[in-house]
Image 1 (cartoon, rainbow, N blue to C red):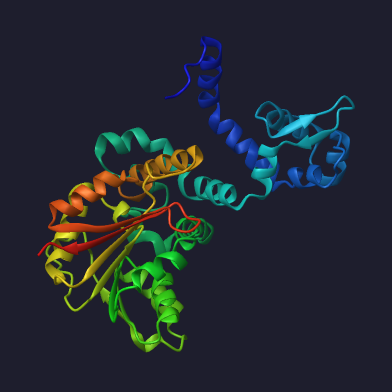
Image 2 (cartoon, one colour):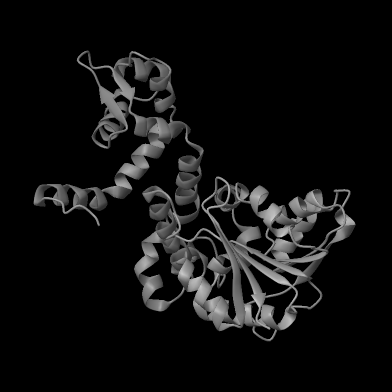
Length: 353
């Protein structure tokens, strides 16, 4: 239950939202102009004239940004007008999660989010047009500007990499010989599996652009002959998922689709596997989180899916995904919540006999 704010507190919170884009850009400028670094290096704090000297930014510019940092709780000032970082400022300067999220917002989402309302109304990612005329971001991913692509992949990997070492132990508890990696992206999971097990064979199923990236990343590895590639557009319901796997892996994949599309994908997975195969879904469900910050970020990420990615997907509640799994003929054999140091839950499914 959230605390009921006073009218004064509530009005302040409302103004934070009204001016949020201003303070986001000011925070980026404080970081990218090296102002936070200059302040952080002097324990006793730094005066404005010293910041001007060390950064080469005009006194006017420093005043604008320092005042923004002060009122947004990034900076504090002592009786001698020396500025130092607050704990919030320290996180903005050097916390990896914050850096990944800010870069993703700045490079991938910021301009396109102006079209959020239109995306909601039209059911299409109207913000994607700032980059190109693709129906979804996935068709255009390999063609995005390099910095945008870099921030996209760093965001994607940050929220899955910490889960992989723990997930792989859980998956290989079973006798896995042929694993299908649906939505294999850059091939990170395929590589991890091949390095973990010397005999397992992997088939990556994805769009051509993503398969090309995965193949480039894996082609020089000693196990490259154990990885094969299958082009598929899972939005096309006529395209079947091939048979032959004893494990199917989908990591941060189904959240890229709307619920009707997820049902279609799971139905085709159900048709492709037998009763002995296990299906694994790894997702950062927004309700299965320890900390409010995690929930806040994940619900925010849903707006990226709405406006940039595809216009109809989101970060799901665990019960939504479990229900869709059951509705398509699976049973949930096991649930592993918040595996390792990650934000992820691993669902282990099997075809109902």
